[in-house]
Length: 321
Image (cartoon, rainbow, N blue to C red; front, top):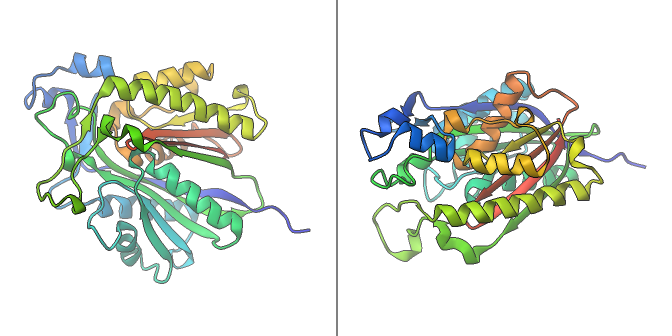
């Protein structure tokens, strides 16, 4: 009888642009204050991509670090999946551009757009390919240059977003890794968080992020409560079994609400929103890499990853690291 195959995280990596924009810097751009931003979001600063620095650049550098940590050569990759809502080009995909730079010729490469849930959607897709036996090594990246589509005159949104990328290398393994993933969407709520510009609309001006923050907050907390319960129930586990919560870094109040729902002290929650802002699909892998490299997350621990984004989209991944 063949043994069960899991997708196991072999290595992680991340990359942040050099430029840092603090809350005090923002006060010179819009009518806001450090106290106002921190009290409502928990954000102190965010990274901004340099002129000419693309989502693919960020993802490529994060990928190099993940591959190095995993001890995997690009030639061993069977697949590259990039979660992003800010691709370099309409086509080819950012994943294809990164594949060429890595020299991973022949590996399947494609992008997934699920806004802030993009990394989890990409991770789930990779997991299915590995479990089916169709891939043994998959590079999964979440990367964004969201500040390119921020309206810098809108103080309710421009304070939230930053640029960055995180990556993981998944490998087929008989040792337990990803236990389950759970993905959902509700397109009927699109106008609560969206960018109304697209290729087929015939509009040629760059789009800007539009958001109704209070509505998004309420839907996000409810959806994340549900997906957390779903992940634990699917695996016959209790919330007390969790070692770490690694959430999407959108807003500290949403993170704290999810932690309370799990009865988890904030000491067991990875928080990077204060330094990164909301990097959309980059946020979960950035937080994961920071937690692993700092020594807080160790092998054998049970992690719950979750995210909520425009679409609406939301999802979770329960895994043994």
